[in-house]
Length: 497
Ligand code: ZN
Image (cartoon, rainbow, N blue to C red):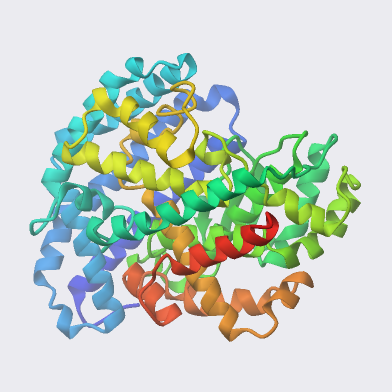
């Protein structure tokens, strides 16, 4: 879109090229995680660093400051004015951070990752503590540099993932989940139910074939995407090229199925944003929490529902045989098994948010200085036992399990639970507006649900702040109540509580 404001036109063309370069870097990442030959690694590191430098230089280009100074947003159309707001935010964020601090953080992040992975293998938090102290010190400095208008340090960091969110609203929202989930967890443990899992050998090619079968039903366009294998499943790209990866364990077919559904949820969001603004800030996703709401809803509210088991069961049986499961109901029970454990990424819907609430509280205390790294392992173990009812056996299954802090990702964890909260709100709203939603899911006719999500979430991209986007879609301010009701209802029935 061009306007009669030359400064705006020059600026948006600069920004579009920067985004295109950043997307090219994303493609190189995808390549590295999927098909790059092992000996390509060192050259790839150089290529990625060169692109990152170029993108950073463009994002801090002083001409952006000049263009922003000359522009009068009140003379612009609302769409252009929204771009200006988002460009100003990104430019101020980038230029507030001194270059030396940015470089120190990049070094600390790559070193931290290696130190963390060794410490995790050895199960010794003390081996990781010095690297984490260094990273935390840099993050506290970063927060002080980028904080605006009396913003708290944690709020300043949160903005990278969830624009507009503050700890004052976020923490009570997450904490309101804690007691209901702890009670539900304890009640399910007391029920001591045995839930059979699929048993047998599940060949990789059949798992992949079933993954591809999911695409047309869930609305993932394979002419604008592809499915490959990677160690950690992810989704990358936008518009006409949105790729997902999945993982395969030949003794457990459910990991592949549900990783695929989760990543397809992310992919739908990216495929359904308006094509003509994909390179503009207002045309990108609203926030990590909104992104996660799309993947979680497809994975849980839809993919782990009783009606979806009716659709999935005959296809599962065609691919693998019954695998020891009696019927669709047994498959439904198997995919919703609740079991206590220590690892977040393996957690079920009941335990998952308890992990996030705990990490959010701990990382916020680390940033504010209420907690120091030397006391982190004890704080983790005490809190874990209080929330989960089991004692952490070692640091590998405890404080060292996640990569996030080693890379300086503080403020990222809460977006997972925010995604769950938004998913439950959006699904509840959708249910009131679509007739026979369960029948649609059971028949694999998801079009009405996908159209609802596209109309209410995807096509708006970043036209609004994330909370406003959700509020507009559901008609009120989001709360945790629909998520609590959904989990109590579903697992109450499953476990006869
Ligand atoms: Zn996700």
